[in-house]
Amino acid sequence: MRLPVDVMVPGVRGLFLTSALLLGAATTAEAQSATGVRIDPAWLRADAVSKTAEFKLVGGLTELNGGMNFNGFSRGALVLTVPQGWNVVLHFKNQDPNLPHSVEIIPDGAAVPGGPVPPAFEHATSGRVDQGFSAGQGTDVRFVAGKAGAFLIFCAVPGHGAAGMWIRLAVSPSADKPSLATAPER
Image (cartoon, rainbow, N blue to C red):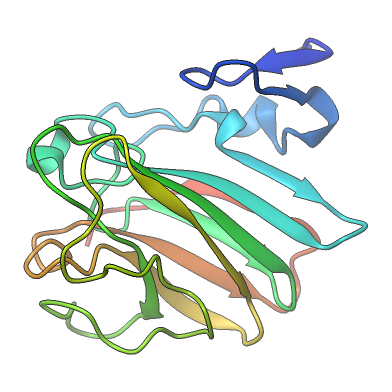
């Protein structure tokens, strides 16, 4: 698959990404969840020099799960993997016209909490975790993925995470670049 030199990010006027920044485009462009939602390679870009992974995170992108999804995925069906020690920037925007949403990075556990819990990393929260952001609103969430392990990118508005509004974050001590992949829902 040959990529163009510049690719316009759908829904973001005036933002172009150089094809060198698109990671795994040939493989992830074909990846999709069991519900038919495809990974858009423009969601993720990386800068190896500054060790920064930037991820476009959209709440309520589709009607899947009643709008309680990130980028059209719920219940862990999308996995963002970042190398341990990298800076992570989540460019969060709520697109759901009916429900407010927030973002918090939390440890992965046996049960998904019903609301906010302390974040797994310092600054790994959108703020307004209880009330969320209305349609069209959002914020950048910036943190350092300082410890390896399994985490959730979780909507902390009470009841949303428990209803399946979460995807996975894997912080890997052996990965050399960020990536996106699908996984079975949990």
